[in-house]
Image (cartoon, rainbow, N blue to C red):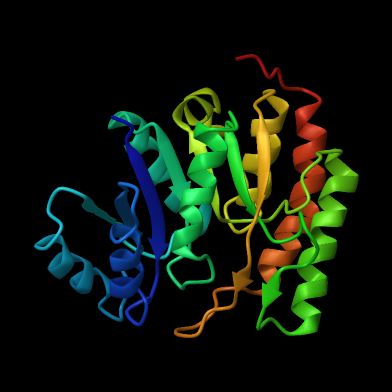
Amino acid sequence: MIKNLVIIPTYNEKENIEAIISAVFELPLSFEVLIIDDNSPDGTASIIKRMQTIYPETLHMIEREGKLGLGTAYITGFKWAIKNEYDYIFEMDADFSHNPNDLIKLYDACEKQNADLAIGSRYISGVNVVNWPMGRVLMSYFASVYVRFVTRMRVMDTTAGFKCYRRKVLETIKLDKIRLKGYAFQIEMKFTTWKYGFNVVEVPIIFTDRQEGNSKMSGGIFNEAVWGVIKMKISSFFKKYEV
């Protein structure tokens, strides 16, 4: 039986967390959920613990001591997934910006189209973003243009955070060598997967900005992406990508 794990990092997501977990478990395909909570002061973890009494076998949580960053949250989740031998490992936000129904699309891309990494892409078929101000849409779109220019990676949505990995990809990547920790972590993971020669497929999705809770975006995230991508590209000249 194929084992699917959806990793959802959380920090102050009490408005969304119960609904997003329920939505995943209501899908016609079987998924387990792993929440990585960074000691949310709003009580997010308490809601998850209550839900674990309803889903004791399929809802998991790792509580961390503080807000340690998106990249380290996912790496923690990836290591847990590898240890527990899940076949497909998904990344998804807690705020419904990613439609849980699209998890099926990502799964199909890996299972039926032989993708090693399936990306839920906002830009593979136009610009599919709802409720973002135009300035943020342009910043996101041209960030991907910039990353493609620097890396030569043929991915339209290089900063996407809605993805599915085959376990062998995460077993191959040296997770402790991933340097970018904020949202640029998403760029480095795609770039490293691509450099190893894995099959990367983009699946069109519609991204909808959160309705509840607060965004975690900041100017520092943008700066990390700009300079981090250049450093990442230079470092790649001195690495061997051998499976």
